[in-house]
Length: 400
Ligand code: HEM
Image 1 (cartoon, rainbow, N blue to C red):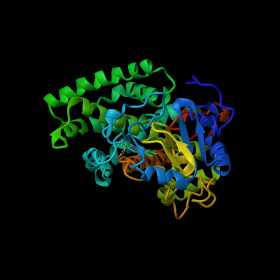
Image 2 (cartoon, protein in one colour; image 1 turned 90 degrees about the horizontal axis):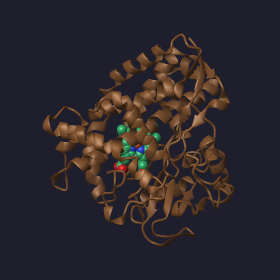
Image 3 (cartoon, helix red, strand yellow; image 1 turned 120 degrees about the vertical axis):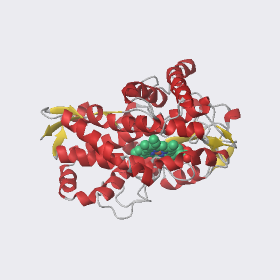
Image 4 (cartoon, protein in one colour; image 1 turned 90 degrees about the vertical axis):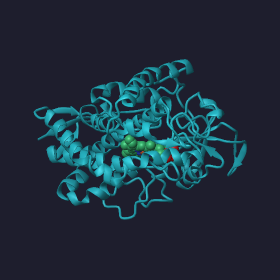
């Protein structure tokens, strides 16, 4: 959103929404890992940036000293009174409440439940690639990747797909409007909650076979969730489900567009897809989440203060040479690949099976329709800013 001063010193004054970071954060993280592995910035009221795999994992597991009360760094921290529930359970919840809030979602995102959604996802991807036929240059982010996850999650929730633009606007506001003044930040969220309230009330009056009705029927702490609680979890699923997967699909297509050897290999050896998906998720992991420090402490020599932010850059952990051989190379058939793209610890992604299914189907369908494509204009590729990173403009020349 460009509302901040440019960064001159990444070790002492970084800003993860800076356009230099958005364009290529890997060089920044590589440098920090070897010179200042836990960077610090006074921006956003104080934020730490561990870049090593070991440190990211240690903090993700340490729910005693780090809270998930707020997970998107901005000038606004959720008030302490909201713990252990937070604003968007389960991602904003701390133990012991977190476990119950997470349990509600697990059956809907199980491998079996997700496998049932594959045929309709494939049919939709095929529809999208057909719409591009006959064109020379297309935008694989705007014309293809962005449509897939929003449609899948809208159908799962029981919301009209035709409202996709509103969902994307809301997610963009939450994830990229982090430098806005607090009043504007809050005001930008109101229309979605007003909208959701109407749909939730309609579901309460006439239950459907979808996720909104399931949430309305769920119990946490021995009582049913109220309309506002259901709305907050729906908002989380929109945030967690849309830009993340859109980013992963786009970044994977971007990699294949600029690496013809990998593209041709994946076309020639389709059985490589499961390993390739894991490697693309490792190399271009889109999601960095955050924690709040619970109390003043010395953490491995870092003087952390209560309510300081700590970014958890899972994408940086995935590029740490101490954890992965040839960490900056994309090795499509990498054998051992315990990457952190979906996080680690109690908050590990609930939607990982869904994300993998969408990514697999999106790449298979794209490659089947357009096995030969390249970047039309490398300088026109634009990446999102902030904690979920992926291409938002990706012009490709397609030859079909
Ligand atoms: C490639 C796509 C995705 C990536 C890389 C990703 C990544 C992540 C990460 C790193 C976390 C951990 C957050 C933390 O530690 O604070 C997380 C949590 C979560 N994700 Fe995903 N995600 C993806 C897709 C999805 C989808 C499609 C959904 C569902 C619609 C989803 C739902 C969730 C939920 C509900 C949580 C919170 C779990 C908890 O707190 O227990 N994610 N995701």
